[in-house]
Length: 102
Image (tube, rainbow, N blue to C red; front, side, top):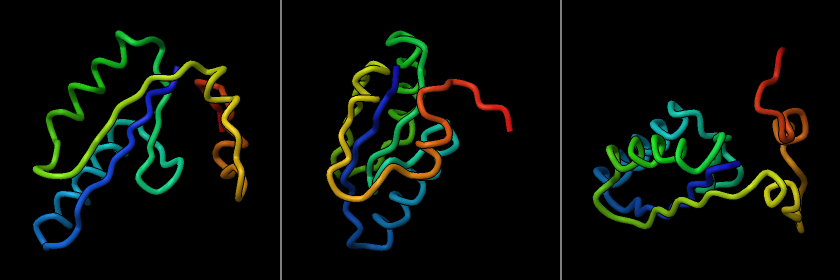
């Protein structure tokens, strides 16, 4: 499965900009990768394992904005259509593999 984190955070004040940077860095530290701006994802073995990452994200939530988590199956993730642009190099190389040896 893939856990997707979709967020829209305000960046009007220096404090809000700092909270955005912290939130984004914590997502990356927890293994999330950018799919698009404000859309990050990571592989999880099942929904119950995703609860760990939900709790981690809840720990460093900013004061304002919107943040949503969504778990989708590998098949649903693979069936995603790219209408404009192309898949990132990382998406092409990793695909649906949980482990990539470099």
